[in-house]
Image (tube, rainbow, N blue to C red):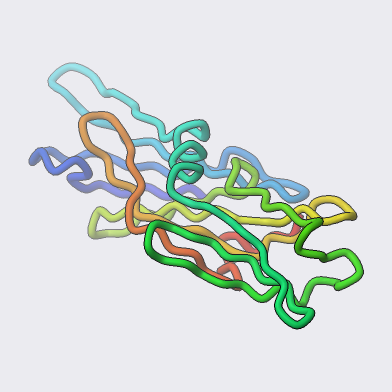
Length: 172
């Protein structure tokens, strides 16, 4: 469902309009796109947070590793000085081995934006794993605040949540 919110997103004293629009959904896909519309005297300028930009920021901010401890495989999601450890016990052990798994980092398959009345924008994206049998379920959600300044978007305050919230609970 589309969201629309008016606030001073770039803190310049002028109100902008944020729009979160669903750009596609289906089998394992649920993609929102974020627009900030900035008015000027005689026109409107539309700024879009495109997938290449947020994927690049996620890639720069997050690293992943696996470990195996007493038969339990763990995924470690590191974001600067924070690490979230996820026990993957619920995944079928016959397909899950730490040395055979890889992470499919946030991409543009499951992306949601939440627009808050206070002008805060949050991006939510799923993290899933690739196993011996192919692509596995979404096992965590990354979320971050989205700051907008001088026509550019930057993510901050990144967090990993597991199990994923309703925003990214699709199973691929």
